[in-house]
Length: 257
Image 1 (cartoon, one colour):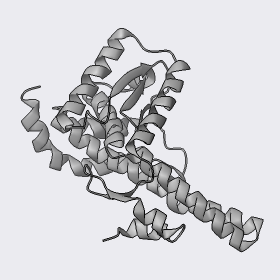
Image 2 (image 1 turned 120 degrees about the vertical axis):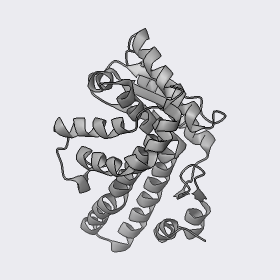
Image 3 (image 1 turned 90 degrees about the horizontal axis):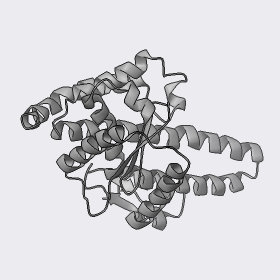
Image 4 (image 1 turned 90 degrees about the vertical axis):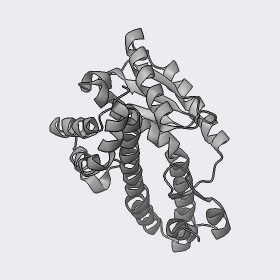
């Protein structure tokens, strides 16, 4: 059966191209539109990662050891396919409390994030979230969606024969397709990451604490429907509802921590 999401996207561009790119992700079980190969995504990720590192300063050896230990423990516990991802972890000296992941298992954590979290469990929540982005193939999926959206908007705009009409259509596509989809990816990575950290023996309740901390710090400055990420308060609430499901996994694996 062709997934509904892929069927909808097929209406925007050549149906054969869109439908041919629909795949089921073995990690999430969700149907995805993927138009680039794992090799292409990995190469793009490696290039972007090297560019970031070349323009940044690394953290201390102790900071590096800390994220390496947590990151590799989560990867191993999650059973992430090491044959496809090399899983490189680096601390980047930047006061912004941020972390990111690129295709091919390239993960970066800012020193500002290390300062923001209060424990290894909270740091594990951040790193597990980024690992989940990679295993869920979110980068490749987002690139594919954006490419199809741009192609569809271009074709529809040409049919409207109106610059104003084309601009309104582009804005509608941004608000109705790309931004909500990005928020959906973030929520999926939150839940998958919480499961990963529990499998690695890190307390999943720490993930709720992280987003409560950011919400208290006043990080939500624009309406949620205009953001690529859910509000921190929304993320904390959603993860709190998921805690009971993953706590048995944590209790089982925390014994050998």
